[in-house]
Length: 100
Image (tube, rainbow, N blue to C red; front, side, top):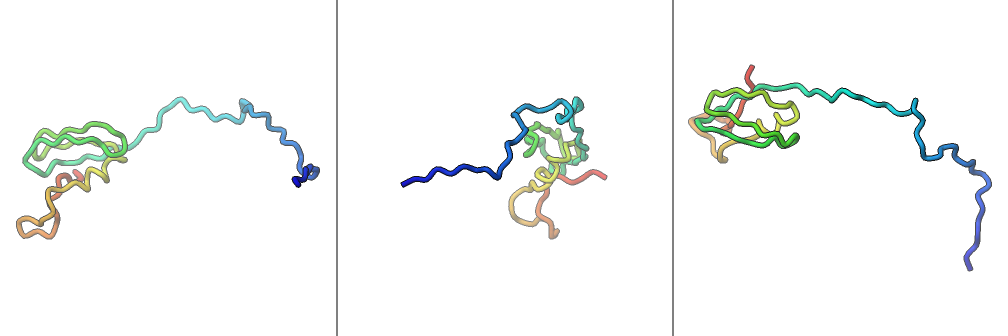
């Protein structure tokens, strides 16, 4: 048999589902992210989509430098060609590097 309970120790909430104007923070300016310059290290035109922003980036040739959104930089810097080390180096064949 089900029992019916009444809660007498809980106060009614004064919140009516509406937000007061002073409780709402409105911003009109968009968030601005820093840019990081990446240089293309391979002898080819490279076109990639930023993994975070979805923005299209295109480097025209080896040595081309492009400013990318800082949120996309780690994903783009992780790109490499194949899985073998080349030319006596201990680094994987990276596609990009940060341009200092």
